[in-house]
Length: 610
Image 1 (cartoon, rainbow, N blue to C red):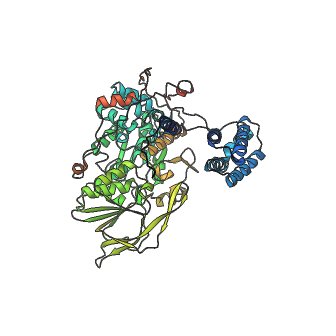
Image 2: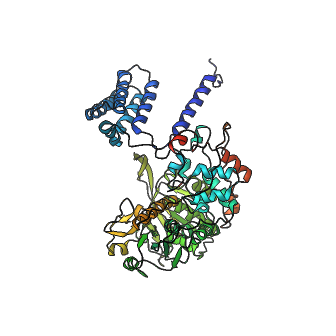
Image 3: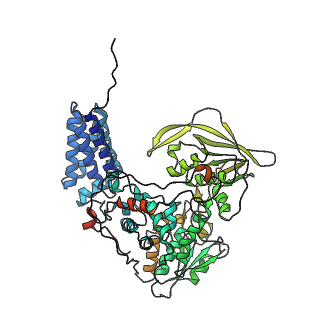
């Protein structure tokens, strides 16, 4: 009888696994702006080296594809080369004996279809359309292009007020973003090559928490120009801030009692304490921005009125209305939109949900805000109903995990079918159709019904969180072009045939993140300034600490801790805890200072003005 032996991995296997992990980290850290044609060549050569070489499609075909790509990069290819490459790739995909050969050829084929323009640009003009306009990955991936290495270095030296001043050059909401920014800057952080990305959002929170009150910079001399901004959300306030700094008198028209838009009336206090939002809003108002509260466009004032009174009008109304399910009974009592539900909380209109069962439809950040808010309002049971898998949810992983920790039930792969209403027209529950994952489309698994009977989920309150819309009726009536619920503008943000009217943020791009709204505000503010005949520059005179030359040894990332779930569900106080100063210094020390080393030193790692 043979005996089984307990075998431990030998040294070779361990080293090879480490090498694969290193390669994976380097791929993850590849900066934006790399030439896709050259990347295809690099991956093709890697795959070619991994094949066994026994079959002709891999041994000869992949080598031939590599030769063609090099011809493209060297300027020796023609348009016929692309057709030959496509035919060769398809032939290899159909005849290769191993998965490596197939996937390598498939990658080239997808590139020929997906970014054919880049191949054509190389062939016809001998140049690449993808260049390093910003060589520092975190800055390149920040929509507002905040000087991230700069403020991290300032936090590392304890210069918190200077860090806030530097952030405000590109983002007037440092405190707010320290709490709720989705931090796309961390995705390609080069620290990933060593261990893990730097906690950039956490360090922004440190700067805001330890700086105290930081006064805004002085405004430029008055230009005598007046600008109206419709909407007091992050986009509108950001644009107003920069326009006021440029010397233009700016007035914000806000339909609600307080400023902040969805920051105040859409994000719960436990994620963004409103007194901390006030820190950013007050700093903006101290520049001299004026505000008209309780004024709704199309009702209290019209675009025509504003065009007569002001030199330019900026529309930044945001996505403040909800999308409908389209089911019968959606207008019954107890059914509400997540936008209205959260806005009531922001207005301090508290609904007592003690002992009630609540169901929230949707899988985004807004639905997570709704379910966690319902839990804090005393609901006995709170469920998320989502037609896809948890892995397909668009909410941040931290928000999903936070909801689960607080006792929220996830009802996934269940599509809303029918709303059950009692004789008093009050919601009793919802029937959902079981779903199963199906074909993958655009990198995301689709779903289809399993064929099983519908499932009944009882609920006293049904909250719909499947998306947001923009109120566009008045703008259409005023002659402003609107398509698919969005205001149409040129690349500068201007409305065609109305040179003094601009639009930016959610109303022109569709619902997006706070940092994207701020980025759009920067662009449109600069373009309005130029339309008025000026070319002001926004700068910051904060001196950035010199990069240190010591070795960067592997060191774990410091994440922000959270209050215990059993404690935090009882109130609306902030969930996250800030780092200590010692933790912040260590985390700031993990930054590799790409603005100084590598490409940053000779390709311009820092933009001092815009």
